[in-house]
Length: 81
Image (cartoon, rainbow, N blue to C red; front, side):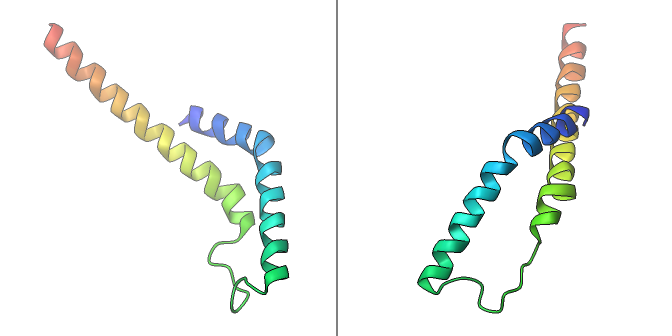
């Protein structure tokens, strides 16, 4: 779980500026072509996506992989004796 939080913190610093730039480019292109959200509403805001959503997803993924790895070690340890 700690590894997931560390990964999310790194992505916040390293990747989010590129993601935000890409979103601005997409929004500008959609506005130029008359496309976009029909009613202007978002299902999940960017603030939630880049904050609690990012950290929550990575923490849960880290915890899941940690549990899986722990289970593999327990099963492997029982077989070795």
